[in-house]
Every structure is written in C-alpha cells, then in structure tokens.
Image (tube, rainbow, N blue to C red; front, side):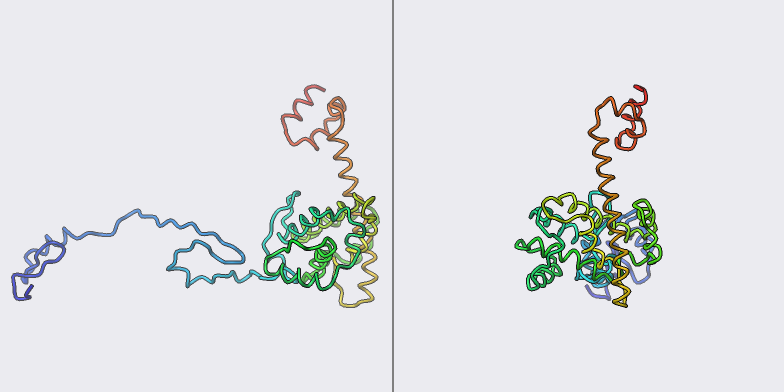
Length: 293
C-alpha cells in the first residue's frame, strides 16, 4: 500500500495523516493478560543441579550443584546424597547400599567379618565403581566391610573428633558413653548411631562370625577419629575402642529389653503402664491399658 494513500492500517483501524482516528485506535489496542501464573515443576538434585527447569533458564544455572561431589570417599557428608535408615538417621545413601548388600550376602554370618582384610585389587576396583555410582554385583562381603571402614576412616574429620580425648577417656560406663554421644553434632550423631547398630548386628551373630563386642570395637576404633601423631592416635584408639564397646553393649541390652517388653504376656503388659507407653506407639492402647488397670 502506498504511503501517499489515505493512510496505513494499524491494529485493524486506518490511521490517517491527520490522526483523526487516533482515539479509535487506542480503544482497539489489545493489552497484556492479567492474573497469569507461570507454573514450573523443578526438582533439585545434589548431583545434577536443577531438573525440569525451563530451557530458557538453563544457561543461567549450573547443571551440577556447587556443593555436590562425584566421589563418595574422603568427602564431607554435606556434599553427598543421604537417605534415612530404619532408625530415622540421615546417612549417606552409599552406606545404606553397602550395608544392604553385606546383609544380603550373609556378611553377618561370615567368620571374621570386618576383621579380615579384603583383596586390595578388588577393593580398589569396587571403590572406583562406587565413585561412579555403581555397586558391582560380584562384590565380596570382606570387600564391603573393608570399604565401610574406609569410608569412615577417610572422612575429612573423624566422627568422634568433636569430643575431647579427656571426655572419652572418662567414660567408664554404658550410660556415661550414651550421654557423651548426645553432645555430638547432628550429622556425627547420626553416623555414630548407624555405625553402632551395624556393630551390634555383627555381635548378635557372634556364634557364627566369632566377633564379640570388643573384637568389633577394636577394628572400628581407628576409623572413628583422626590424629596427626601416630603414637597419640594409637593410645587414643584404645580409649575409643572401650567407648565403642560400651555403646555396643548398651545397644544390645536396649534391644533385649525392647524384645522382652514386646513379647510379654498381655496381663503383664497391663500391670505396667510405663512399659506400655514406651513400647506401644498408639496412645489409645496406652489409654485402654490404664483403664483396665
């Protein structure tokens, strides 16, 4: 259309050079919609960053989270993917995977478990695969046990390092050790609780694996703390061993008490209100028991 004509068509209305129809033009303009929501479902993964982010935003966000680590050994738990164990402890998923495989392969019934040194070549191979996120099917029980100890040993800071050596040395009873463990930070407390229950599982099968509380505590103790001086580390390991041994024994006693309470006759349960309220999760059950008493 020639510019010398009556005018140009804009927005469906002809605008003349004199602008006589300018008012009509403004009334016909289409504005932006209001009350619009742009919904995007985004998942954050420690190892892959943001998943499901709109394409136009992806260049602005790194694909890998800054704190994520591709390794599973020698790194802080803060940079690792964690899951909850049966007791509600948040621990690295790799530990739970190795524990599950160890149990499936009959590791708890294997003589000398956690004491016998695994084959170095196999351990290095499995370690490399674990750093790639793969747990090989052919992994042996002694290799798994050795890697669990190595995981604790190679932490940037030992699980018990926040406790002073004097505090650990003064723990002479099971109750004293249990109270001292409560002073650990949340992350270390969860790791210790997971490890103690793993050790207790081993000791419960002592008749098969020949590993009592002292044996298991002895092989785990050097992996729970870090000291620069080898001589001091050796001396302190003896105190840590005693600490772990007492914690294992207390855990086994607590399990036995819980088992007895849960298997007690109904009449005996009704005669003990406190026992019922501790071992029965339902408030209504506790209430009905009290009324029967």
